View 1 (cartoon, helix red, strand yellow):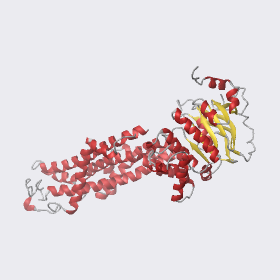
View 2 (cartoon, chains in turn red, blue; view 1 turned 90 degrees about the vertical axis):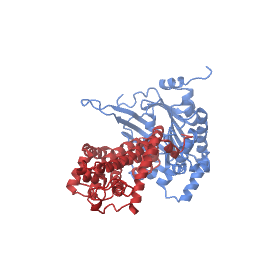
View 3 (cartoon, helix red, strand yellow; view 1 turned 90 degrees about the horizontal axis):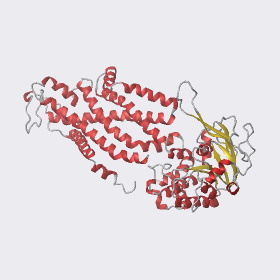
Length: 281
Length: 291
């Protein structure tokens, strides 16, 4: 491994990483800027300026309530990012913990955890989220929790698989011979060695979470009005699709760009990180 | 071979695979480790539902003792169970039968926590110097692993001991902040030896410590092992497939085949006058340079 270019160099040389990173950067930046400034108030309606065509004043025009679309899109990024961060955190925390536990314990504990997560995995994610929201009641927080829960088995499986590979390595045996217990080995050796695999999965789950939130909001099960949300924008403009089709295109493009950006970033990260892992094995 | 017949394959050797029922020998205070009739069987996954799963008899009744300051070598071809034996002696595997007594304590009967504490007195060096060091840890942490896990040492004292032990194996103080991949195979094995040495153990189990290294580096590491024995009085259990390695380091040697010792005795005697057929084959198989 001597003489390899630094990880940053390799990242910058990777096209997917650069493209995905830039798109994701734009998404994050948009959300941050919208916290302090948007061209117009994204919530305020102005019935005298309904369905205005794009102009310098309203970059993307206005919707049927006279709200500035560009501002709603900007503010909607906040919602998507919040959903992504919170739900992925939930999924990752529980999923990784379960996966590590299964991997450290083996035997019946592992079987039980993995079969339970297979059971959850077998449901289509969106269906499961709809089911959960239907039981918990609709609303932004429940949608986030539901999305988080359906990413638990994804992380659990991935973690278990990666952790099992680490447990089979000789340095784990060396750690046991050095007098370390299972908990200590998990924290000090297993977790640091699977972080790179997890980072890739995090970006991919983040994209899926944004998509899932848009779907739930589209169905009216996610963010409630007047919180700006791309999914709900799609729903609200659905009735206008023959009058002003562009209204539905904007949020759709915003969702597509975010998801594309995160997926490219994930692919790039995998390419940059994984070959090194493969060589180490 | 069945497990009710541990002497099968023991042939005409001075028999070290004694009868199963015999009680564990009385421990002499100078005895560091006493291995008594150790069996280790593995169950392979079932191939069909209708037949019992296959049992692999990796170790099939092995008995030996090592005196303080001695070095005991186990040779045999790959797959003869010698690595399993090493892990059994280290308490890293559960035994199917038998006992391993370290300074008179049966390590496989000890509660988990007590065994963990006892581990500071017996450490291990592994075969693969690329696999036995965590690639994400710096040398200082790797070498300090046993004291970090087993002792309540202050940070600066820990660092002092790491440096001391690194020097003992011929590495530098500046090496503490490097990652394992920055070292060559021989240097990595020195790191692994430093880690095994840091708790000042009475016994070091070395499983093929040089077989992954270049021949020129092998000699250096073997010399190091001998120097450390002179300096710290460690006892070695050395596992190797390489007769030359065992001949160089060990004062007593056992030849292992199919899970049992077929022959055992002082090194010179075994090499000069092998009794068992398998030993003869093994010795004859060593390539002779220059005809």
